[in-house]
Length: 238
Image 1 (tube, rainbow, N blue to C red):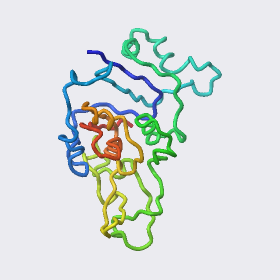
Image 2 (image 1 turned 180 degrees about the vertical axis):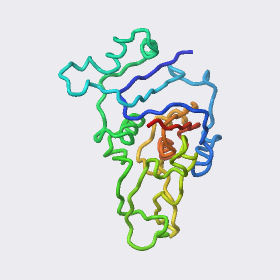
Image 3 (image 1 turned 90 degrees about the vertical axis):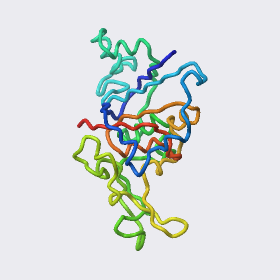
Image 4 (image 1 turned 45 degrees about the vertical axis):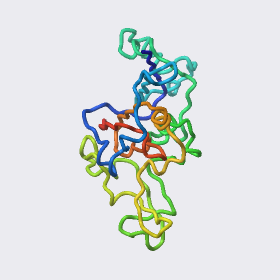
């Protein structure tokens, strides 16, 4: 069974913990029976496993330096530590070095670009703190003049002091919209995204997906369908 590791320039990082928040972030996330997961032997294509490592601080070119593009952080590290785990992984990896960061190069738009291939203009994700003239606060019940500062960071965690954010969202901190039938409904992060994620593509083809990242808000990579991530593990390293 073949596998591949994709090493890329990074904008966010999270370390796996034995904390499963697939249940509780706005309900089951995603429904584990839709779409179904096939056995790996049933999957078509050359590779059966792909792992993306997103390591905070890795740069395409060493900052404030005139070195060539070949002197990226990963290559420099491996040259310094040829017996390291990263060096071992790289020997069995697809290492794509022609990477350019999103603009702005912040965790939320950067990781979105990584998992969708889209720029902020296309994905609709510019930052984890934006203003939207069409949305409402929880307290407004979608009445009065719309306008809300939408946050997709630890602010919307049910417990921002917990390693996993409490495993759910504080619904009073989410943004709300008036539906076409006049009710007032909250928006989860994945409902912001305008484009499909690689997780959705894998699920649609019978694959299994898992994401480990630093906040419940990273359920955004469920994508517009809301079903991209089969298991979401979360911890936060600051």
